[in-house]
Image (cartoon, rainbow, N blue to C red):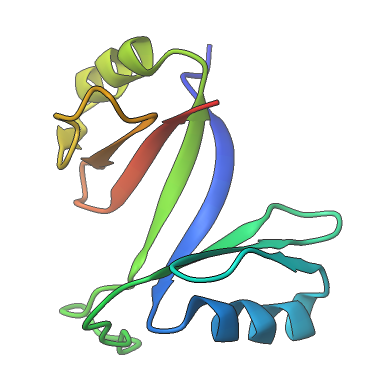
Length: 119
């Protein structure tokens, strides 16, 4: 049984609206929101989200020493159960201490960040 369903791919960037607009032109879809978080609803595919990141440094590709600067948001029904599951699989908590939020941040075994997000 899966612990989560795929939520959204989130790209960190200096200007979420501008980057969402670029991808809307490339992929089609509808841009929703403004400010520090902007969504792009892509027809027939998963949504993309764009998050403001102060001090954003674009990744270099290919470069083993440079961050790819994205994370996955995984939608779950039960944050506590999903947390137990991902920790058992080798995830490490990055910012999971605030239990009042509807999301928690972890690193996968290779160090890539992802969030568990309750619906």
